[in-house]
Image (cartoon, rainbow, N blue to C red; front, side, top):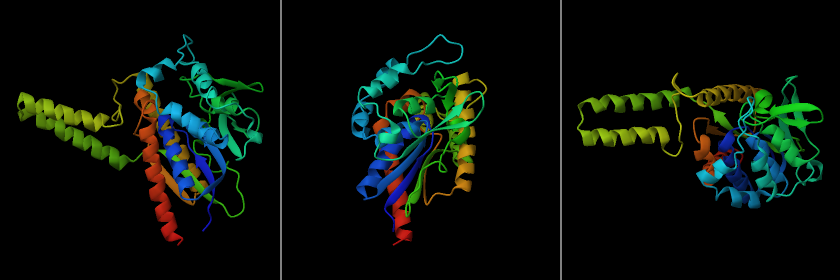
Length: 304
């Protein structure tokens, strides 16, 4: 059974911190990551790992509280984007030194999108953080990046899950971690449970109603903050976030169909959004580690 891994990491906002735990689990089990391709959050975590900076990055990240996360957002008055993105990149660079991609020990590819031509743009050389900054540039959220005359946005627009962009070596196995899976069955179960709770309030005492409200809130926010459903009354950010989620899920599914990985790990899209996710990185990483452990158990059992 091969222990060499070509690792593909999808886009996914704070859910991408699951990749930290997944990488740690691969290493703990004796797997050697021989190449990485990442998009957005996957480019951030994958690139920092390939540069040898994951420990320093993790130590800083795990200690962020919600207020510190907010202070890292350099809000802009621009009509085109909400956050400049300079403060968070500066904070990361203070802990992980800049390096050229071609000088890193592990071959790495970051995916971005040309805003005007719609082309997929691959970074396989040049400054690492220039590549990461381009790949994480969520449209309308972050200021678009510029590189070699191009205006670049998040790579998830064209290739959410770059299974086809990771460099392969003889005898390796393709491992992909996707955090954009939308499961309609799970969502319907959640909605049904919530509906039953709301209905049950009608014949309850005040104390029981309060207790039921707390239980209902936990369905919505138990470790995951803003959950479904998105309604017509929600703000534009939640609608936009959900729309990108559907797009990413669809693109990821097509990528999996065209380039089936030997090991596929999924984390549902409907987990860990907003400030909650960014300030609970350690928790998310632990979830990622467990999901990778489960996937490796299945793979090793099949190939024993």
